[in-house]
Image 1 (spheres, rainbow, N blue to C red):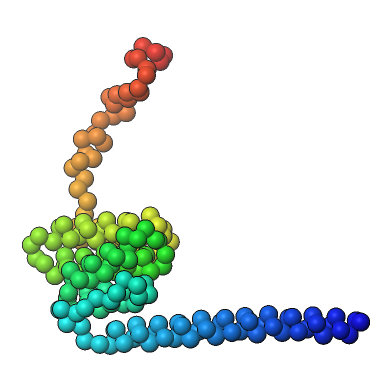
Image 2 (image 1 turned 60 degrees about the horizontal axis):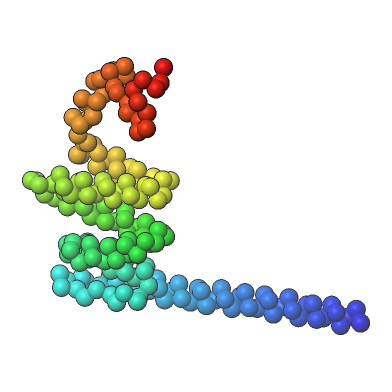
Length: 183
């Protein structure tokens, strides 16, 4: 009786290990195929009229396609690809990378332009801030935001009038209270 129980336990344990190994093997096969497809997208020359991937394809492939379009100079198609990854409301690693790449694309465009680059820098800074709200530990985004702030500093004039007033001169209004209610 004990022998049968030990053999049964060993058989169940072996089946569990075989199932886990099969699942890992399938996941490895899927990841290898995905990596090969990403390498194909990165290696293929991208023209200005490049067709975008269908929306049902893997998010990683959409990110690779948008990055390839951005590197080729087709910024409008890349913007559509990045926006498709960001606007789903998901904030997974692919969406965070799309935000980072979109911000860098705006900053590169701003650096390439001599006039009218300020709106592009502002868009890039805003995308980096959006990313840092989701992933505050992203040091690459922090570094790029700091570089963008050095290239296009924030306007301090809006804050200067408020900062010049002393604390005693500021009036605080609280709804529901009359000025004589507080001592």
